[in-house]
Amino acid sequence: MPAAVPSVTPRQAGRWPRRRLALWGALLLVCLALAAVAYRYAEDAAIDRLRLSGAQRLDTYTASLEHLLSKYDFLPGTFELNKDVIALLRRPGDEALRTEVNTYLERVNRMAGSTSIYIVNLRGVTQASSNWRTPDSYVGDYVAFRPYVRDALRGVPGGFYGVGTTRGEPGYYFAQGIYQDGTMLGVATVKVNIESLEASWADAGGKVLLSDAHGVVFLSSVPQWKYRTLAPLTPAVQKEVEQSRQYFSHALVPLGLREVRRLDSRARIVTGPPPAVGPMLSQARALARRNWQMVYLSDLAPARASARAAALLTVLSEALAIMLVLYARQRHRLGRQRKRAREDLQRAYDQLENLVTERTASLRKMTRDLRDENTVRRQAEQQLRKAQSELVQAGKMAVLGQLSAGITHELNQPLTALRTMSDNARVLIERGRLDDARNNLATISQLVERMGLLTGQLRQFARKSDTMPSAVAVADAVTAALFLVERRIAQERVGFRMATHPRDLYALCDSNRLQQVLVNLFSNALDAMEMAGSSPRQLVVDAGLDGARVRITVTDSGPGIPEEIRTQLFEPFFTTKPQGKGLGLGLAISEQIVREFGGQLRAESPPEGGARFIIDLPRAE
Ligand code: ADP
Image 1 (tube, rainbow, N blue to C red):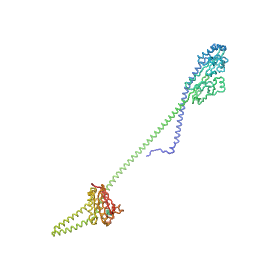
Image 2: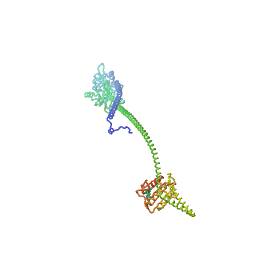
Image 3: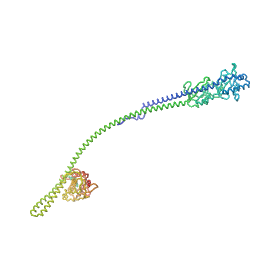
Image 4: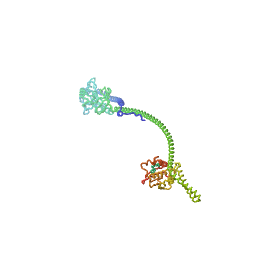
C-alpha cells in the first residue's frame, strides 16, 4: 500500500512557504544580533583590559618623568649659596671671576647630569655658563625673552620645556632668581635633556606623547608626531609661542588625531595620523604641576580581532546549535517516518497474511474440487472407455453382419456338398464300393475341417479382446484378416499381393484389434472397387519398418478418395455408401484403435490412382 507521502505542489517545491521564510529571516536576525552583541561585549572587555594596562603605563611614565624632573627642581636655588656667583653678578666685568664661575658651573653640570647651567644678570644677559669652553657658549647671550627667564626675573621660579635657540636642542629649563639679602641679583638656569624618555617609551611598545599647556607635542615615542599640536592653535597662542621661540623654528601644525568615540573624560577612541593605522584607544593623564598632559595610545586592532573572533565563535556556535536542532528535528522526523513505515509494513504484512490465508483456503477448496472433478473425470473416462470398447465391439459386429452373407454362402456350399456326398457315401457303401466311399468320407472330413476353421475364425474375430498391447506378428494378423474376405477377393476377381519386410515383423498392439482394423480396410477397398466397377482390381498390402515404427499400407485400385471428403473420413457416421450397406463407423473405430496403441491411421491418394490407408504402430522386438 502506498506510504503517506505528503503531496508537494510545484509551487511549494519552487519556493519556501512565506511563514517558514519569515521564521528563518527572524532567526538570522537574532543570530546576527547575538553576534553583534558578542562583538561589542568582547570589544568592550578588550578595551577595558587595554584601559587598565594603559592606565598603568601612564602611572609609570608620569611617575618616572616627575622623578627625573624633581631631581633638578632644587638645583637653581643652590647657586645663590656660591659667593663667586654673587660676586660675579655684583662685578660683571671681572673676567677672572667669570672663569672661576664658569668652571664651577661646568663641574656642577657634569655632576648633576644636566645639559647646561648658566647664570643670567638682571638685564637678561648670560654672565657665566657651563658650556663656556664650547664655540656656542651662552656667555654674553641675551635670553630675557625666554619665558622661564622672564618669569624668574619677575620673581616666579620658572619651569619650561623648549628648544634651545643656539643649537636647537630641546630640554627642560629650570630658572630661579638669585637673591642676596632679599635683593634679586640675577637668575640661575638649569637645562635638562629629557628626550631619553622617548626611547624607553618606544622600547616598551605603545605610543606615548607629552604635550604642553597649548597642546603642542614636545615628546613622543613616534618621532613624526613631535612638534605637532593636538588641536589647531589659536592665532594669539601661535604668536606667543613664536615670540618666546619655545620650539625654535618648528612649524606647529595639527597632528590630525580624530576622535571616533568618547568613552569618558580621559579615554576616547581616535584614528591617528601615520604611521598609526586603524583606531586607537587614547588615554590622557594631566601632569598638573607642569601644566602638561601625557597621552597613551594603544592599538585597538588586537581588541577588534578578539571581538571578531568572539563574533565568529558566536556565529559558529549558533550555526552548530541550529544544525543540532535541525539534526534533532530530522532525526525525530526520520524516526516518525520509520515508525510509520514500520506500521505500514506491519499492515501490509497482516493483509498479506490474510490474503495468503484466504488464498490457501480457496486453493484448498480448489484442490478438493479438482480432486472431485478428477474422480468424476476418471469415472467419465471409464464410462467412455467402456462405451468405446462397446462401440468397437459393435463395429466388429457390424463388419460381421456385412460379412455374414458371404460367410453363410461359404458355409452353405460345403453343407450342400456334405449332404450330397454323405448320400453318395451311403449308396457307395450299399453297392460295395468301399474305396470310393472312403475317398468320399475323406473329402467330407476335409469339408468339415474347413467349416470348423471358418467358424473358429469368426469366433476369434467376434471375441471381446482386452487392450493390453503385446508383440503381434504383422504377417499373421494380415493372413487372419484376409481369411475373412478371401471369398470376396476370389469372387470379385481382385488381384491380391502382400509383401512384408522383414518377414518376422512385430508391432506392439493387440492381434484381434489389428485384424479388425485390417478387415475394415480390406472391406472398404473391396467395396470401393466393386461400387466403382474398377478394372483391373488390385489390393496390395505392404508392411515394413520406418525407423522404430511399423508401417502397414493397404492400397487399392478403386476410385480413390476425393479431396473434399478426406478430412471427414474418420468422423463417426460418415459414409458415402447406400443405406443398409455402410454405418460410417469403420474408419472412426479403426482410427481410435490405432491411436490407442500409440499409432496413427491416415489416408493418402497415391499418384497412380486409387486409395491408400497407412497404419503406423510402434515396433515390438
Ligand atoms: P462405411 O464403410 O460404413 O461407409 P467407413 O468409416 O468404413 O464407413 O468408411 C467411410 C467412407 O470412407 C466410405 O463410405 C467411403 O466413402 C470412404 N472410403 C473408405 N475406404 C475407401 C476406399 N478404399 N476407397 C474410396 N473410398 C473409401
